[in-house]
Structures are given as C-alpha cells and as structure tokens.
Length: 170
Length: 167
Image: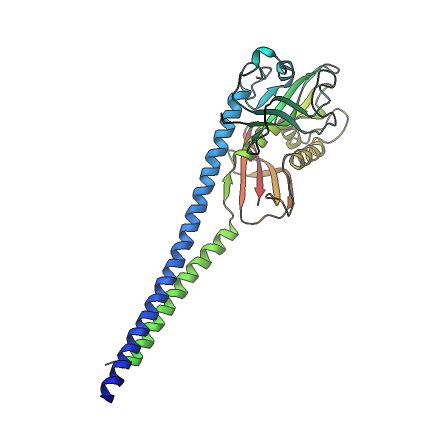
C-alpha cells in the first residue's frame, strides 16, 4: 500500500511538471502572438488613418478647386483665391450649396490680428467663415495656400492657410 | 543511456535556449528599427510642403515687387543669390521656413509632434551627389517619423525638399 502511494505521487509530480512547462510555453507563445497582433493592428490603424487623411484631402481639394475658389493666375492645385472666397461670403444664391455644417478658411502664417474677415478689414484678417451651422468637434483640416492680389504694390501674394470643414458630407 | 534527471535538464535547457533565441530576435529587430527610423509618407506633411512652396516671401529678386515664393528662394539660395535689398536669400529662407513650421505645427515635448527636420538639397542626376541648401531641425526625434518630399527641377539635377515630423 505504501509503495503504491509513493509511485503514484511521483507520477503526479511528473504530470504536474509537464503541465507547468506546457502552461508556461502556452503563455509565452500567447504573449508573442499578442505582440505580433499589436504590431499588425498598429500598422492597420496607421493605414486606416492615412486613408482617412487622403479622403479628407480629396474632399477639401474638391471644394477648393471649384471655379468660385480656384486660383487661376498660375498652376497651383493647393491654392485658393482669397479675393474670390471673400466675394463668395454671404452670397444668398450659395446658401445650401454644400452639405457641410462648418467651413472656414484660416490664415496660418503670417498671423494677423484682425480676426474674422469682413469687407472693412480684408485682407488684414485671420479667418473667413463661410458656413457656421454648428461646430462639430470632429472637424477636418488641410493646409492650403491663400493667394490674393496685393493692390498697393501690384503683385500676387500667397500665404499659408488651412481649410477646416465639418459635417456629414466628409 | 540518459538518466531521467538528465533528460529533464536537457529539456529545460532547450526551452531556455528557445526563449533566449526568440528574445534576441526581437531585440535585434528593435535595435535595427531604432538605428534606421522608417519615414512614413504623411499626407499632412505633403500638404504643408506643397502649400509652403507657394508662400510669398519678402525677398524680391531682380526688382520690386517681384517677391519670390519659397520654391524660388530655395533655388536662389542654392545659387548663393541675394534679394534686391541686399539680404542673403538663404537668410530669408531660414526665417520663412522657421515661421511656417512653427505656425503650421504645434511642436513641443507635450504635443503629438515632438520635433521636425526640414532639409533642402541639390541632387545631381549624373554624379548622385547631394549638396545641402538648408537644414533646420527642432525638438526631439524618436523612432517614429512621418514626412514627405517635394521636388523642384534644377537642371541638370533637382532640388529635393523634405520635411520630417517626429512623434
């Protein structure tokens, strides 16, 4: 009886040892798997982010390339004619032209102190808000070049700006 | 004939060796990626470069009001040219690029973008040589880099302008 008990506990010990090693190996490979998974998921997130950014850029390019905004003095895809955009502001015939809830053109550099552009302070101003139905936190922006005619010295001037849009149409 | 204890030790050593080899592979991969950070193309950086190249500086070349755009100032700087008012075109380029980057991106230790690198160089098609025109950097750059390049034709080569954003 005593011999049987001793051999049984030895066998159990062996089984336990093997089980521990197997569990350790499984945990180890699961960690490795998770590591690979996190790497592949992060790259997936990056590509999703990139695709989203490209989509936003495309929709902003579509908006800025319409004749009402397009800079036609020279070949520049990322340029907006600010004089045209200024004339566009407040036109009753364009109400509801876009499905956006927010559309703003913002001067990035050089920074002016004029605030919102009006007929009185243009071009010494910073922002030109064309649609302001509601400010959605998930707004998208893209860098553009804001070009205009500088009448005092008689040349075309371009500054760095941003187009910020929000709405379901993006 | 091996004893059972010896067999277990051999098995244990094999497991340890396997673990060490896998860890070394990961370590090697990490160190390699640390040495050569991969530059991912960034739409934002590309937009920034494209728009910045159209920025009109206060450097008139030839006569007033022929104020040059950044792209033209880079070309002028590569030739060692000067503005009408006597300033060096490279000096104007330096000031303008710093202003554009600072205004365009929030760079800082507490921000998503920790640093940037702006470089413009002339690359000759024939000799594969690179001549630096301007190089500006700010902040800390870790492994994660995104950026973009912009090419300006400059016969017989080209001027490559790149911006790298470090996170």
